[in-house]
Length: 205
Ligand SMILES: CC(C)(COP(=O)(O)OP(=O)(O)OC[C@H]1O[C@@H](n2cnc3c(N)ncnc32)[C@H](O)[C@@H]1OP(=O)(O)O)[C@@H](O)C(=O)NCCC(=O)NCCS
Image 1 (cartoon, rainbow, N blue to C red):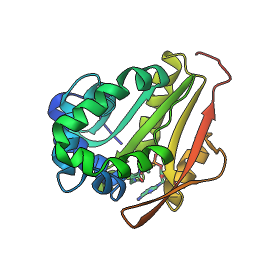
Image 2: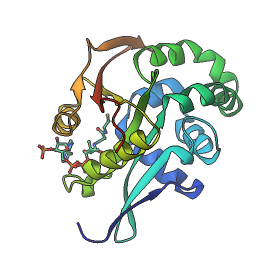
Image 3: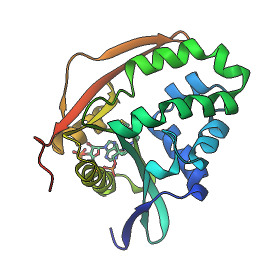
C-alpha cells in the first residue's frame, strides 16, 4: 500500500485504540471490564506508565488514515507497571473493579504473562477495510524490532484458539505454539488461548 507509515501512539489516538482493541478481542475485554469497557480502555490509554498506555502502542497509517495498531512491552515494563495498571483500573472501574475481580484474575491466568527476557505483544488489529495488505505483518515486524531493542530473547503473544487467520499469520512470521491452550470459564463464557512465541536466540540486530 502507498504512503504507509508506522508511528508511536499518542493520547489522542484513544478512540481508535478502543475501537481496535475491541476488534482484536471482542469478548474478553467487555467480559472483564463491563459495560464501561470503552471508557476504561480510553482512560488507561491516556495515562503513562500502565500496560494499556499510549506509550506502548504503534499505529499504522495509510495516506494519513489510521488503519491499525499494535501494542507490546517488555517483561521489565510488565513488572514495573502492573501495580499502577491495577490502581488505575480501580480508579476507572470503581466498585466494578471489586465485583469483577474474579473475572480479572481468571483472565490474567490465561493471557498476559511476560516473564524473564520476553517481549509481550498484547494486541494487534487492523480495521477490516485495510486487512490483507501486509499492514499487520509490518506492525508485527515493528514489534520485533522493538523487542530486540529492549534486549528480549523472544516475543510472545496469546491468540484465541479459533482465530485461525491470525494463527496462520503468526506461523508465517516464525512464531510457534508453546504448550497446551490455557482455558477459563469467565462469566459463563468459555475462553481458550494458545501461547505463541518467536525466539531470537538472544541475538540483537
Ligand atoms: C490478524 C490481523 C491483525 C492481520 O492483519 P492484516 O494486515 O490483515 O495481515 P497481513 O495482510 O499482514 O497478512 C494477512 C494474513 O493475516 C491473516 N488474516 C487474519 N484475518 C484476516 C482477514 N480478515 N483478512 C485478511 N487476512 C487476515 C491471514 O493469515 C492472512 O494470511 P493469508 O493471506 O495466508 O490468508 C487482522 O486480520 C485483524 O485485525 N484481525 C482481527 C483482530 C485480530 O484477530 N487480531 C489478532 C488477535 S491475537
